[in-house]
Length: 84
Image 1 (spheres, rainbow, N blue to C red):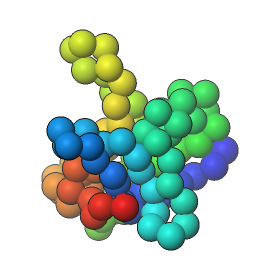
Image 2: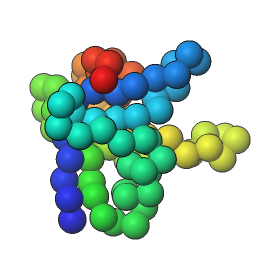
Image 3: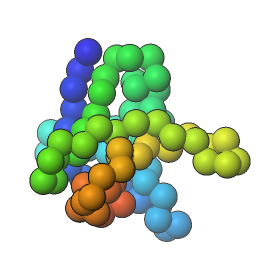
Image 4: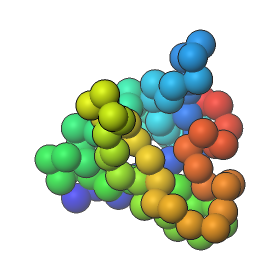
């Protein structure tokens, strides 16, 4: 299984995350990351300051998206990461 650290994100005009990656190393659409998690090919995490797992969540409307596990830090939330 691949293990990838997310350090940056891309967002659309609505603020939705459209891609995740690590600047200069790799970048992929969120749909690819979601697929990779669901089939067990890869796991993703954010490290800021502690390592926090990224998982697939579903909105009430059924749309899948990436989310970090809840903890006491706002810095490791995907929405708060720098832009790709």
